[in-house]
Length: 345
Image (tube, rainbow, N blue to C red):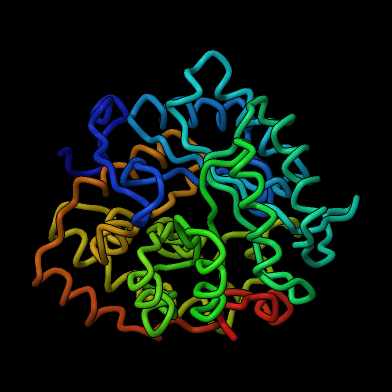
């Protein structure tokens, strides 16, 4: 496999695969998270975003992760445009639903009612220009609706052929068990990185007991672990990180000091910090598929090189010493968003 940053040409047809749990689909060993192409990280170049999706597909990336609320539908429309002229079966489309937005981009909670599930999917299928979604998942647990009802509604859509697999996002071990008792869950999408390791205590062992895979987002901690972040970087009011605790002045330098410790390990291996951070997540188990949130082709090329970066036991131990569990300063979301995480309760 290529080493260093590499180019996208190095990766044509080189991507290995992993299977999401015991019942889920086989997908590329790295997936592409599309959120930042439409929302929450400031302005993005749409033409470059589509070119990045094309480059990912050409490199063998099959797992495309989106949400119907990313840019209030824009992200799904962007993915539809990017997939135009491509064989539908080349993409495994994972969609999150349920988050409520307002015209100003604000957030209004979550809706997991069965009638809402059917409504959300109808709009998603039209925006994506497809007759089915490969993995469909509520973005968060709706505290007013039992998870059995939400999953049961998706299970009916599976029977009807509109959905292939059911996933979940940011739920705890108990919720995972209850959902899986209704219908097999292919994978749990949840934040997992060197700076966010909460799933290791109860959630990951439960997922493995039940045969549920993990798609890990935030593997670069929204840029902190990219190796490119500077505390002097100015953020717009539309950038999620402007109010994220780990990017606040009282925390960011501590977190960047951890990055510098990783950089020394990465440089000794001839890799970048981003590649090391992604490879560490991938090394935690064959049942884990890291999602990379690249918005540009150069960042994508850097991330894809991590797929071939095999870390030795000595390197994994060095990484653990440099960034032990709980080392990050600040929670992964601000308090209001943390309150919506069943995985943190």
